[in-house]
Length: 276
Image 1: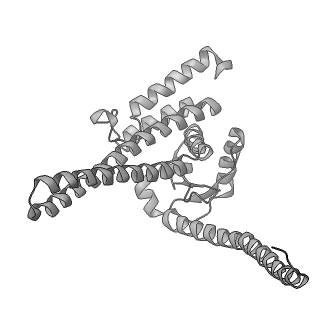
Image 2: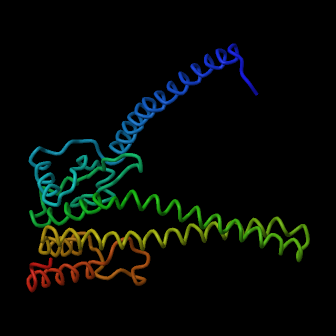
């Protein structure tokens, strides 16, 4: 097909519109994404502070955490003091790190009221180092993503299994019982999906606690602080020395296991300090 000059001029005008529209869409996507991302991050930060605490730490407290983070080569997180609800959940002598969203790059570190008042410097260093490893490895973020994907895969498998069982039931049972049995099977399969996801989540959580303990102690040499803190936890919080049911229903290793690890790493550091 041959184009006349009139056709060419008409198409050139359309191409100008297409080009202008494309540029406008790209610019809107760039600036719109930046605006929406900023608004979303602001909302997530406000929601997280509302849930766990929004009060700033004292300058000397922030300086201690910042010095430990710099010693470990880890970016400094947003630091806040736990509110009353978080204290009831995580304890009076504790700290925890959280990445509130997979899209929010900067994580939070929440510290309890009694953390700086009652704990020794060695204990504080052990806990902060432990939480800094969680931040560096993005444990809380990957935990959420992994569990969501796992639950989705299990539910997909349960749906496929339900369809196969539906065919079997359709061929073997009367119509009056089919719907009831399928409903019971659906509830059982969904419950199994939740139970399996929960057990794997606990196992994954125990794994990242081991990683945080070991890596932080190797960097900070905070073995004695770990032993002191675990002894305190057993006495004050009345934590069991060994987790029941072989620990499969626990989200942390037992105090005995963690103390044994601290002592083993400490002895290893004494024997070969260059390798630790």
